[in-house]
Length: 140
Image (cartoon, rainbow, N blue to C red; front, side):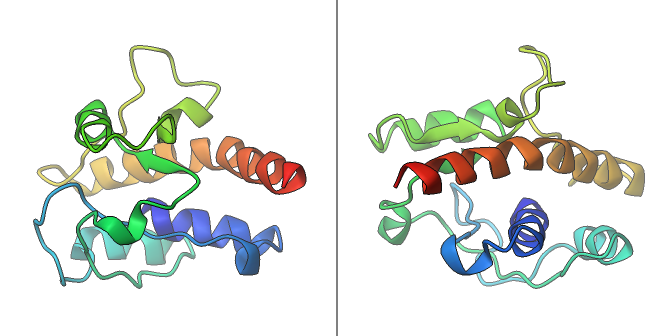
């Protein structure tokens, strides 16, 4: 969900050709599968693409400028790979997220309302993430 929402923001900002965005899990669950149908429904209902094929984090991702994690468990998994200080929680880009609420909710076992809440958390972080991209590109 975050990949597609952020790609839409990059496209709207005219940066799609300058930034590579990929999505992967820290484990191999669902590798090769499309997004969950509830995710796809939520994305399409709000004007986003639902294109996605699940993949696992691998050496092809090691050169990323930024590795965005959805929750603290993902951060720990990525930090074990000694990737430096390029790992950040997505919600750290949301100025309204408190320090005790930085994990993006995992809606997998929830309802359609949970998928909507997750989308809203992602959307709230996108302006800050987009600002990070602008600052990084301007400094390059």
